[in-house]
Every structure is written in C-alpha cells, then in structure tokens.
Length: 185
Image 1 (spheres, one colour):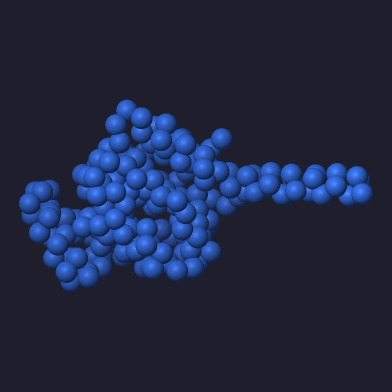
Image 2 (cartoon, one colour):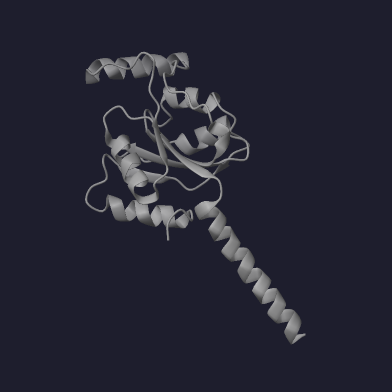
C-alpha cells in the first residue's frame, strides 16, 4: 500500500509539473492587441518584455480619425451598424499559436468592432485566449463575455483589467497575472 501511495504521489507530482511546463513552453504564444490611444499598446509591450512572445497590432485598413471627437462618432457609428471594419493585419500562421493574449480598450462596455473582425477571421477552437483590457474606469464591461460568445470553443481565461495606462505598479500587476496563467514563474 505504501508503494502504491508513493507511486501515485510521484505520478500526481509529475502531472502537475507537466501542466506547468506545458503552460510555459508548450505551443507558441501570441500577443495581439488593438490600441487607439496607446494605453493598450503599452500594456502589450510590457507583457512582451516579460514573456518574449510574438507581438502583433490589429490595424484597420481605414484607421479611425486622430481627432478624439471624430473618433467617438466613428466608433459609435460602427457600433450601431454592428460593423466589421476591414483589417490590414493578417496572421498567416495562426494555427501555430496555442495561447493568444488579446488586448483591447473597453469601448461602450463591449469590444471594439475591429477586435470582432479579428476574432471572426480565425479559428480559435481549442485555443487559450487570455484577455487584457484598458479602460477609463469602465472595467471589463461585457468584453470577456463578448469574446466567449464570438469564440465559443476557445478556452477564455481570467482577464487583466487596467485603468488607462496602469500607473507605477503595472509591471508587477502584469507579472502576477502572467504567473497565474503559467506564463512566467
């Protein structure tokens, strides 16, 4: 009986260790983000500095205006029309990625329409999506549930919520969040 318990302990320890190893080294990780004001870009770049994954910006073929008031009008029009703006960004080897860290701002408590275009352009079945969201005190809104509805067969994990650009503790917050997902020690 003692030998059985010892063998089971070793096997269970190996299984948990293997899971951590997979999370850190199995498959490839992609950081992909949409950013208009630069806050989400800064978060994505900090994540990349900590895990060294590939980094891709979601870019529209016809970008929104640089004028904030015009931008708000364009975003609201796209939202009301349930638009899917065409993207300049193309990822030819999406099948090579098992984990996607997806960054975006919270606009009107939902995903920006270009992020919908991105999510609807690829097959995320069985992939792990780990969202991160910048916002001006709107928190995550319905963005995570939007991802779950758009990619019903993806494994959507705990998101990181960052107010504006995050402040002085951003690096530590990101590290803690990445560690919970097994992407750093």
